[in-house]
Length: 385
Image 1: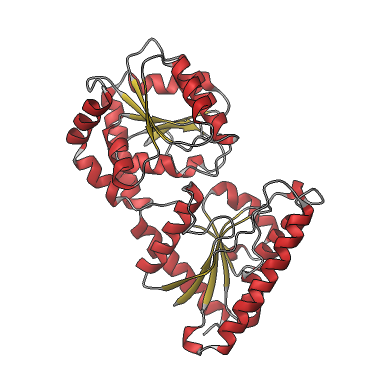
Image 2 (image 1 turned 90 degrees about the horizontal axis):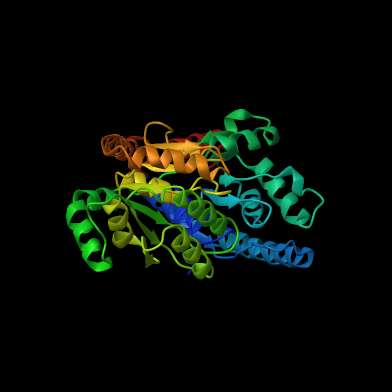
């Protein structure tokens, strides 16, 4: 099938790394692995972070103009080059989709949204334009792919036919992490030598951008939890960078004097090697939709301690692949981490179950199969051709 792909928040080719960009990349990979032809419809970014009504109105006009250009190009071009389905990744009030619904109406093709979010409290507020556009797109969609059970509950009131909503859990390409895990001993030795680490101690690994807002709030909760673990032997490896680096590093160093190693921003095999060399991932995930980093840790065979909020229970199996504390409770987070730091056998068993669970339930291959079946069904139901 020929699929037009669009990510109004952040295109797969965007220069700044983030979880959103990575999920967009993974969706394209999954579509192609399932045998579909994928075209990036546009890199137009509809994001308004500040609730600026004039900016939203201007973005709406730009989006509508781009939509009309796309329709004209495809209608005038060869029929064999037109998309047969449109898939938009991540629609919400700050980044609505001004392109997809209009293109799909004009071309008579199915409209699919992966990860749609709806916040009724934004109606009539500073994001009213984006909120209404997101609501209309969600109601118009032929299929909504919800990554978490939290999303399912928010979307159901907007959709008359429950079969139009499908749970497609978060996933990743596990192979780089599995390969790194097989080379764990060598990677651990290399990191120990490079960063003057004690390989006989447990290593806590964290990978997250350092920016103001929710990420910094997570670092703050992490620091509070680590301070309560100061009586235990461990070391902390943090992969990440950003404008709040100094503040995040200061909090962590104060909580764990002499134990912190800042590795900077890592990706690909380098990041996988750090996860695989670690013993435990601790991350509070404040206000995160679910947290790709926690999937990555588990793919490398590392158990996770996090908080049971929003979509985190969809990426960490509490009691099986990790442990989940109540949100906003650093003491509870520290208590769960203490259990695993003091019990290497349990930690190892959880890590083994984590990598097996990722392989069977959260892999790129599994997602590609689920996605292919869902798109084939909606394609047949809408009578598209």
